[in-house]
Length: 176
Ligand SMILES: C[S@@+](CC[C@H](N)C(=O)[O-])C[C@H]1O[C@@H](n2cnc3c(N)ncnc32)[C@H](O)[C@@H]1O
Image (tube, rainbow, N blue to C red; front, side, top):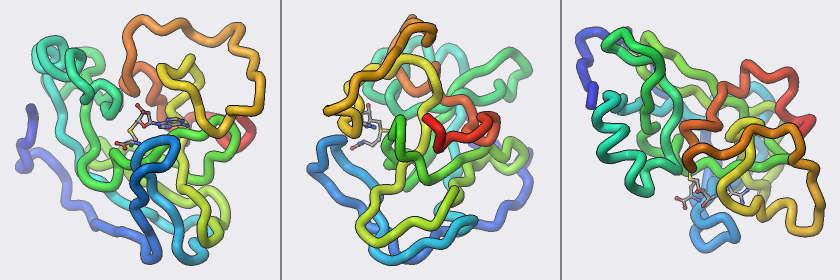
């Protein structure tokens, strides 16, 4: 696990007002708005813990952590490894149709930044995109919908790590 702070840039931390963590939703725990959060608000800046490849193989891929990790550049210089967002960052659920939060990596600072993609109203859940591949769980937002998964990547192993492409890389994450 890499926590070598000497190599990271200083980063302003930020967390928006008016956030609630609800338990026992159909998605487990989730983040909800208790007040209007304007478009562009930085919801959270979450520091990450980066796992090396051995740790991924021996530990994160063998445990529930695999459902919480993001792709991350390998500080040792290899290809990608994985990292977990500490704090609120690991609490954002996925929505295929109703994403209202985009996220991006700040590699130099070792953080993930979550930003409101549109105005979010009181009572709404704050949801990100886990990417375009097939999910390892049934999206509870889509209970009454049939979605066409043809052409989506097949699962080779479960976990956010294979889905978490930065939503800032996508054309428009709200367009499902
Ligand atoms: C990064 S965690 C999110 C926080 C999680 N709900 C918790 O309570 O720890 C990812 C997990 O949340 C659940 N989840 C996320 N989005 C979901 C959705 N749209 N529908 C159903 N379950 C979802 C799945 O169990 C998934 O493995």
